[in-house]
Length: 146
Image (cartoon, rainbow, N blue to C red; front, side, top):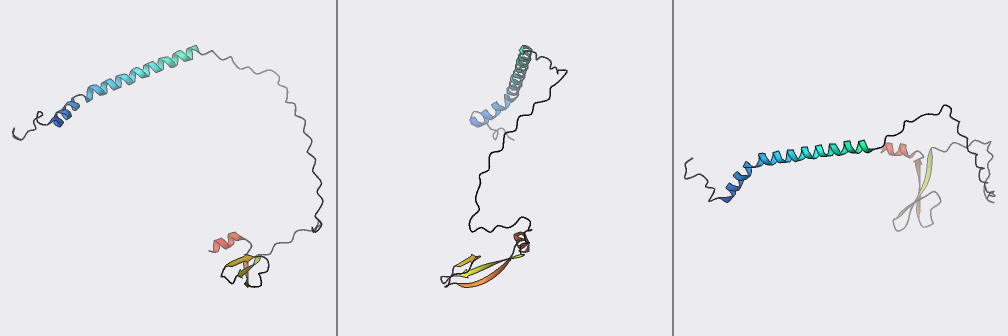
């Protein structure tokens, strides 16, 4: 490279700044390391001083004989209010085992004159077109088939 093409720092201030900042990185790093180590030493001394000032805890001793805990008296159960059965309730005897539910559930699909569909377990209104759907009782089985 000829001297004519060399960058003159007086003509380019950015070049002078870059070369100046490269000169100082090592001393700045040394100062940062020195400050960090001084901080570490000071913190270590403070921790040692604090532990020296702390009172010593007495040694834990176990008594020779320990009494078993006294059980608390059980509180009486709150009274259960009496509820009369409903007049129209069907009372089954507890000796009769419940019947096995059917495998399918029948649902009425009611298509209204407006085109809306309603699903019900009861009868459809007079103006609706009715059809019966048989759905499996176990919904997980129905979801697995999809």
